[in-house]
Amino acid sequence: MYYELLLNQEYWDAARKVFPSKSNFGKLYTEITAVITKLGTPEQRAENAAKTLTAKIDSERMPKAEVRDAKLEKLFEEVFNAETRGKKLQRTFLRAVIISSDYYINRHKITGIVLGRYRNGSIAFKDGADDKCKYGQYSIYQEYVGGKFAEKAGGSYDLNLGEIRCENVNAK
Image (cartoon, rainbow, N blue to C red; front, side):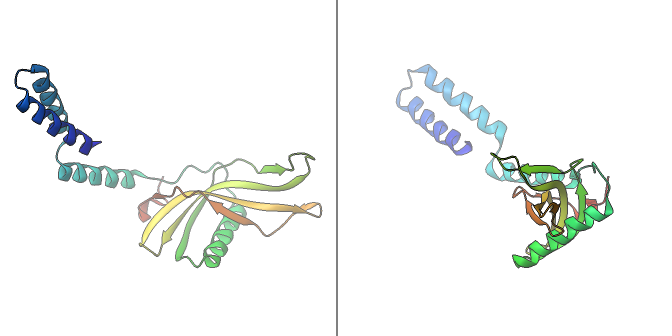
């Protein structure tokens, strides 16, 4: 959008020079110039964006736990670590927080038969690729086989991961 404003500024600057009798061309040029001045130069905008991003990362915290269950948090860790090894990612698990109060049951659309269950949480990990701490929503899923839920679970995470300061992973 910024560069479109610059383009329009050039357009109206040329128009007011070519048609000096058209006062509205000069007025449009002045209005666009005021908006561009208020936005700042590309360098100022980049510096401001970097400050805003740093402030956002500094203020990030893990969500509040809906349930505290050490066994379930350990399951989140095990599933995450297994998935990380399977995908050959360099990620170190830091913390899991359970954000759903209970399991959600997955049923067959037509028959209603229970297929499995899943639970939502938020996990924090250190990414070896860029050495930054990140967090995001993570779900574990257990299939329903032979009248019981499987002990082994699978996991999936939201690709919209946020960056968090490593020292803030356990902060409240």
